[in-house]
Amino acid sequence: EVQLLESGGGLVQPGGSLRLSCAASGFTFSSYAMGWVRQAPGKGLEWVSVISGSGGTTYYADSMKGRFTISRADSKKTLSLQMNSLRAEDTAVYYCAKSVRIGMGPFDIWGQGTMVTVSS
Amino acid sequence: QSALTQPASVSGSPGQSITLSCTGTSSDVGGYNYVSWYQQHPGKAPKLMIYDVSNRPSGVSNRFSGSKSGNTASLTISGLQAEDEADYYCSSYTSSSNTWVFGGGTKLTVL
Image (cartoon, rainbow over all chains, first blue to last red; front, side):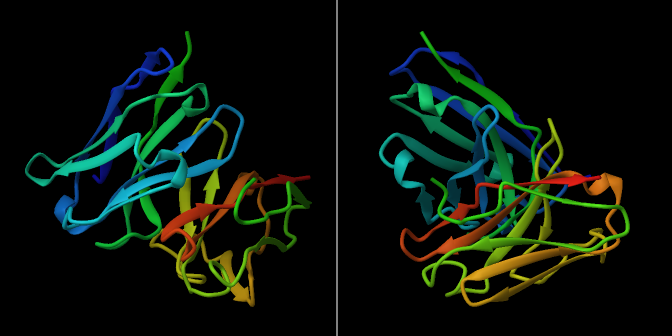
C-alpha cells in the first residue's frame, strides 16, 4: 500500500525551529519529486516546497525562502522539512505529498498531515 | 490573496452537472497545461481528481472532467452525488515564481 506518514509537528514559540519528517512506503521513493503543502486552520491549501526526484533541485514559496529547507534521504525513503524563524502565520497542518512525476508537479499521494502551532 | 481565483461556493442538486471555475493569468493557467484539481472533505487530506488539465488519476470517477480555455480552467462534475460535497481546489504551475500555486477553494454543496 502506498503511504506517507508525517511526524514532528507540535507547539513551538515564535522564532523557534521545528523539523518535520515524512516516511514513505509502497512506491519507488527516489523516482518521484516530493513536497509539502500546508493549510492554516479554516483556510485553503498553500504550496510550500518541493524537491525533485534526483534531489538536485529544490523549490520554495516566496514566504518560506530562507527560513525553510526541504531535503530527502532516498535510502531511508524519508522527506524532511526544517523550519526556522517560525512565525504565528506558519501555524497550519503540514501535509507531505508525492508528485506524479520526477519533477515538480501535482501531488497524487498525501499523508494525513501534522499540526504545527507557533505560539507563545 | 490566492494567485488563482475560484468562486467561494457553488451548489447543485443530486443528478445535476455543475462546473467549477479557476481563473489565473498567462503566467500560470493560460500559459501551461499544468492545471490540477483536488477534492477535500472536512478533516481529511486532499485527493487529486484531475491533473494536466484533463487527466484523471486511476480510481477517480469519470463523472469528473477538466478543461481549459484561455486563462480559465474548469472542473465539471456530472451526475452530482451527495458524496461530492466537499471543498475543491485548483492548482497550477506558475512561471512568475517557478513554483505551484493554489486557488482559494470552492465549497460545493449538494442540496
